[in-house]
Image (cartoon, rainbow, N blue to C red; front, side, top):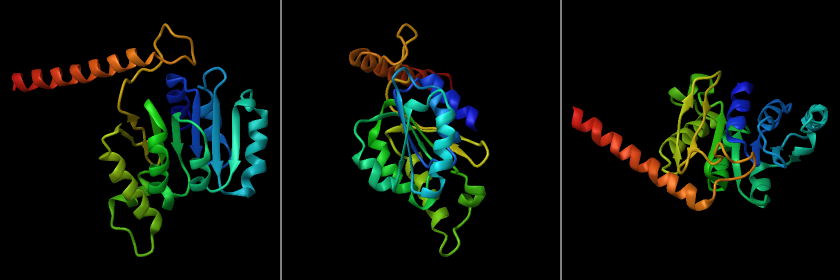
Length: 212
């Protein structure tokens, strides 16, 4: 799974990454591999006990200067962070997933990616939650809302415990091959590309209906 996180980040070349749920720091290190020059990754975790361990791994990384760890409740930390993000990875408290979605969805740039871990939740999302099982109920709500959110094009990857990889609607390629890493496509070009993608999709659907 870490290699998938790294691959997505390297393809996107994000300038800003937000991670909710640090744990040992492994996923943050994988995501940081794709950071654009002068990019930054902010990782948030409420568990003070793992802070020293995570920071020790970050310190050994060649990207240590690009990683900022914040210890605190993500529901309080994220609202005070400045700016939007090219890539967001949610892997925090499962019972808080729907709240995380409310916080980060508006902060994902058009053409960016929001990823979430444990969305299959050991298969429990397919059954009625047991009384008091707030985690399963929250993950189910998160899945339903994200799957039906018109702001995102979503795909669920059956990797380990399930990984959502929704892309925010709009131009899928924000970093053209001719642009150096870290430079975004001009807004007019991005808008034009987004409209072209929509037109191509409509044309494809029309052609498929005509063939039937």
